[in-house]
Length: 87
Image: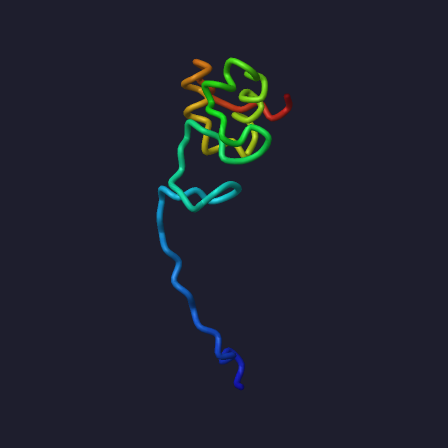
């Protein structure tokens, strides 16, 4: 076979902006009010606000919590204009 001709074919990537990329169950649509990974999988942000608000504060700053930041801020009543990564 010549260079560049390895019999490989491109594949189509479906673009679904409602489907999250990352950990968790991707077989269903994303619910920003309920965690889909980790120790608290299946629990809602509101439940966690009452039982472990420190976890939510941490999750809001962590890359794995990006999808949940809006809901965390709504539930905790916080508006963060910048993230202090040194804390």
